[in-house]
Length: 162
Image (cartoon, rainbow, N blue to C red; front, side, top):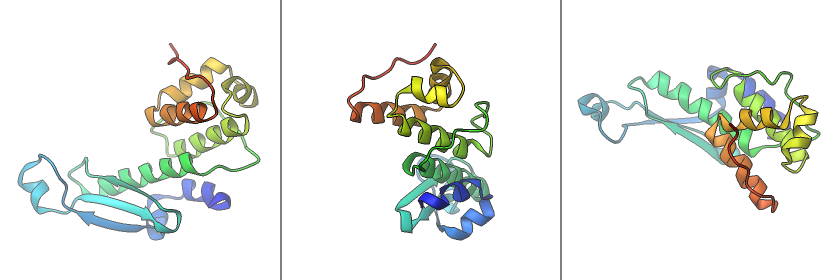
């Protein structure tokens, strides 16, 4: 996966879907007859890498597939590191941008290469330490991953930025 990570993260939904095992099921929980009769819940898997993602938040199978693929891209970004780290081209990337998973992956590569010291990583990314923490904190999953990695390295947890 290492060499192919960025390719996976940049592929459109149709191309990434072709590489995945996709299963459709009936969603669980409240939602009435529509939810109980149609298979709108989606699970996408990359079995060779043992990662998967699911979504059943929408009534549309197509939107759930798109959401699950986005979650899968985030899982790839969280779990696979590239070295040497290549910093993101720009620190301005919104959470809803199609390029966000690649941005997050590159940010985590830089952090990992710098032992999750946000000051050193920020210098590589040409931003301040507080700006880097704000980028991490806006995505709860990214923030939790960052804090977990710091704990595993024996570093203290950081307070959320203001």
